[in-house]
Length: 113
Length: 109
Image 1: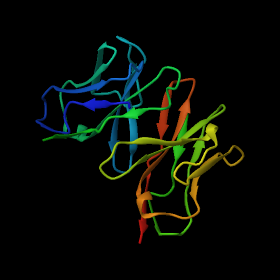
Image 2 (image 1 turned 45 degrees about the vertical axis):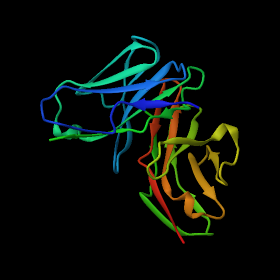
Image 3 (image 1 turned 90 degrees about the vertical axis):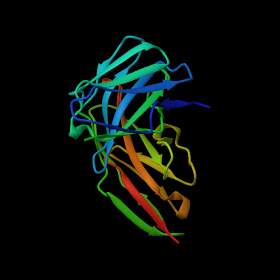
Image 4 (image 1 turned 30 degrees about the vertical axis):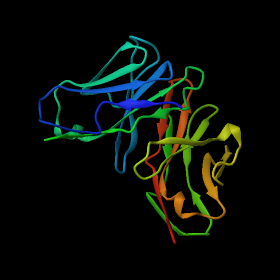
């Protein structure tokens, strides 16, 4: 059973803070993804990675960066959090051969005040 | 550019009634389409993909290239079908899964 875990379910940060969101998967998946989920906007891709130390920008990368030092771990970094980054953040992973079959984590609800 | 449109934000039906969740797409190429579902307090998960042509939990979806649609259907809705449904398109050229904005389905008793 694929397990994708995220470090926090709820997080409250102040404007300007540096924020780290961690995601770990235990199924040896090559691909990992970060999305944000907002009501009325659906899921939007922030960044993805198809291999260790590789990263690609998604549709809304501004204000975010990522790190993938190990295959099982993919971190999303908000360099200087802003209130418009208040959202639900979802991590996902998938096999290289089935990149569209993505397994999602439970999400981190981030509030920036 | 690839785009997925789900015209209905909310859909409410009664138990036992047929349900159809609409999805239209825009893609210059051969599309691969999927439906993902998120039940209350659960993770987003894959429901079905067009290429498998299978029925999952009584749901089916047919790709209509002429109408660029991939509507999700179920002949008799159940209360446990209440969830948020997302249509998604996989772009082979850019390695991205593009999601629609979602339709919240409520099945009333």
